[in-house]
Amino acid sequence: NKVLDSKKPPPAGRLFCYRKLLVALEIRAKRLYREPHLSHFQKRPLQWILRKAILFTMPSSFVISQILVGGALICNLLSFQFKKRTVVLWILTLAVLLVSGQLYFLGQITSALLTLYAVLYFLVSTKTTNRVVMFLFMAGGFAIFLLNYASYLDWFFMVSTVITLLSIYNSNQKRMREYQFAGTIIRIIYYVIIFSPIGILLEGALFVSNALSYYRFYIRKQSGPSATITS
Image (cartoon, rainbow, N blue to C red):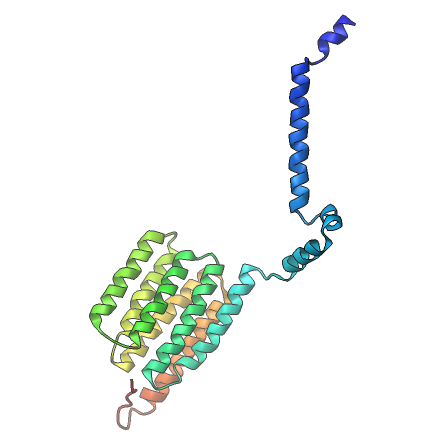
């Protein structure tokens, strides 16, 4: 009996074991309450059903990103088919805003911030083509790039930002479209690397739209008077 008694844990040890057991049970109870478990359904059936419905119907970040860039695709197809510079820039501004959301949901935060920043300088470019304003926006874009740099992929959007600024703050409409060709090619390479199929389609549509309008306004009419686009 003495040997058996010596193997039993002392009262303090027993109390410690009981406390650990109670803590474990409390943690388990909290998990059951948080998770959409059957016991949760029995206690609050309406809340359980709503939570299940939200989880079932909520699209993934990838799906949301592709929906946003699909809207930008439509804007890009339409943008360069207009002759007025301000109309082109307003449609491109909407496209850029949608692309910013797409990049955010793909987890490309620096690129998303630079694209969101582009919304601001696109809006300003509808009112002025001042080169000082352009260089100020370049400096701001470079600051965003340095503060949020994450990988070599961010360089694509930084270079694209510089080319886009050179494009939209150029009063020569023909030169504006030529800069857009270069910026679009860089973004296509970027989307190929991060594997965003609809992003590639988006920039491809912008390239085709720009090429068609360039042919209509400049190449086809080169035998006649030079085609100028009104502001």
